Length: 306
Image (tube, rainbow, N blue to C red; front, side, top):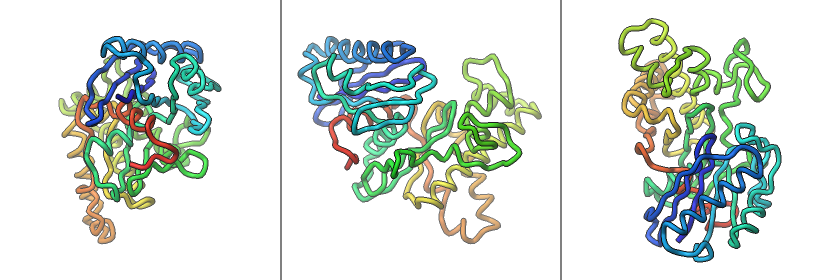
C-alpha cells in the first residue's frame, strides 16, 4: 500500500491506496499551525491510518505529501506556506525520521493534478491542466503523462498573471492578478458573506435576482473561463480539469464557463477552432485528488512519470 497526505489550511487528509490504485483507508485530522505542529499532525495521520488498516507504518511502500507553498521536491523542503505558519521546513526528512519510511513532498496543486490524471484514466501521452479554484487560483500540469514543475517549480502559477493594472494588490505583491478576480478570495472581497460556503451563497443570491450577486458571479465565471483560455493557449493541453472548493458548485459552474467560452468563439474563428468548451470538465465531487495524487507522487521519482 502507498500513502498520500494532503495538508490543507484546516484539515489534513491521509489515504492509503492498494496495488490496484483503489483507496482502502482514509483518515482526516485538524491541521496544525507552525512547522513542528505540521510535522506532528502529518505523522499522526499516517500512524492513525496504519492503525485503522491493522498494519505497521513500515509496511507502507511509500508516503507522499502534498502541501501548499514553494517546494524543493528533491530535498523535501517547503517554504512560504503562509497559511500554515511555515516559513522554511525540511518536511520530508523530518517525517522520514519520525515514521521510518522515505517521504516525498510535492506542492498540493501538483499532487492534485496527478490524482486527477489517474482518476480520469487518461492515456500516458495525454496532456492535462488541473485548475485549482479555492481561496486562491493555481494550476498543475501533466504534460504527455509527466508532471511538469518548470525550471524553478513555478509552472502553473497562472493566478499571478496580472490582468488588470488598476486592480487590487495581490498577495504576491503585483496588482490586478487573475487570482484577485477568479477565486474564493475574490468573491469574499467583492461580495462579503457570513455563509460557511460564500461562493455557493453568491450563486444562490444571483439565482434569486440580487443585482450585486449577479454582477460578481458573472465576473467570477468570465475570469475562470479566462484561466481556461490561458492554459490552453500557453500549453495547449488536451483537457482542463477544474478542481478545488469552488468546483463543488458542479454543473452551474461548468455550464457557465462553457457559455462564456462559446460566446468568445462566436467572434473569434481562432478560438472557435480550439473547441475550448469541450476540453473542460470537473473533478467528481468528494474525490480527494490531492491526497490520492500525493500517494502516486510518493512512489515516483522526479519528475513524476505516469
